[in-house]
Image 1 (cartoon, rainbow over the protein chains, first blue to last red):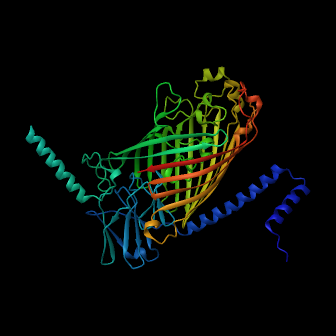
Image 2: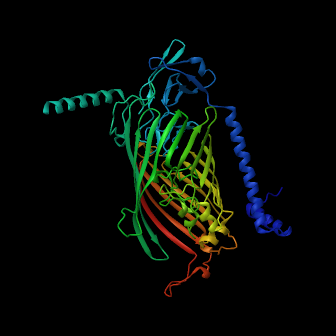
Length: 166
Length: 418
């Protein structure tokens, strides 16, 4: 079967537009409509995909600067967003491939703005700094990596020691 | 007296050392200039008040091929000062000097507050700002550091259609959803002033930027951001009155007054993608002033009833796959961007069409970041406009060359932020 090349398609489209006496403006409007429809479809698909895997949020409180999270919280997901009452920033806690845990304070090290999770990375809406999933700076103006909190495993719980942030 | 000074100095030294042991290291630029030791409202987190200083700036060289004219300018140097009063209350400010200096009587140069607001954190994901701030409209308005956009010049659409940096006085609510990757914001700010709209500059001259803004009219602006993998989507909007006059004065000019009188509407959407050194962004925006005819009747400033702009940009970091650590930590972005805009897409009966306001720009170049905070840029911008309207030439210069709808600009620049 003959497969039309892109120039052929453009020619055919142009011819069709002429045949149906379509105005150029209408043609552009129609094309834009198709583009918007396709973009909307993509956006909706991405949205639905994200809704299937919402951020796992653990709400807890600290005692003597220590937060305890049951290890079972990581049974179905290697990542948890931890919100500690009276702590100014959320914590990102992730289980690494080797079974160790990493706890990051989601505070931009540039000007102290709370960070937004973007895919597996973090983004500061204030000045645009970006950090990777390990907390390393990937885009300035931040110069320092995210603050890592000391963690240890106590029986069946993950203990995170809270320190003052930047 | 000397003894007291020595004891005070020793205590200060001891306190500094103890704090240095207890706190994570900070960047030199984020030096704790003042630390009062005041307890925060919270038990944990940023438990001490602190002051942070940082800033950014950019300098450029531009050669205009048509005019055979070159220009160098310290475009802007901005000093950022922030202060954390407590865990929940902070102050942010940016003081900007444009074009290096402001001399008496000189038309160029500007010193202004780019931002000055108080931030009240409600919880880790929601906060309120009050003061002079940059609403979340477009990409560059909020993230305008030179290290964060490709090209020596900010995208033309985000200069001419969405003026950057567009700041107004108001109150805003910002937040992120907990379970889904959404950010949102809504803000109420002072409105624009249609008496200051000028032909050729969109609505940017109608901004008060914090200076004696008429507050009879207001505006509401809102944005939603959505993050999916390496994609970021945003839609934002603005709706506000443009007549700050009292009803009596407005009536005498036959202008609609009130909070949302003689409205201006702006709708914007953008997409950004970043992954493995590839970056892509696209933005489109539309501005509508339904009562532009009334504005032209009152002020004869040839305001359009509709303007639009759009651009798409593709970039790639050539050092993304560098094997040596020395080069992998650096960035060499090559990019191309195509922009279209029309500041008089639709005119009321009282407007005069100006073809030079319908423009397309093709920009291609590179940006080299030896470290993430410093950038060296070079690019070429090809400009194409519609024809000049001779009816708009009130006093044509007899020696002026014929208008050329095509022009080329060669740009070099450096930028920093810390």
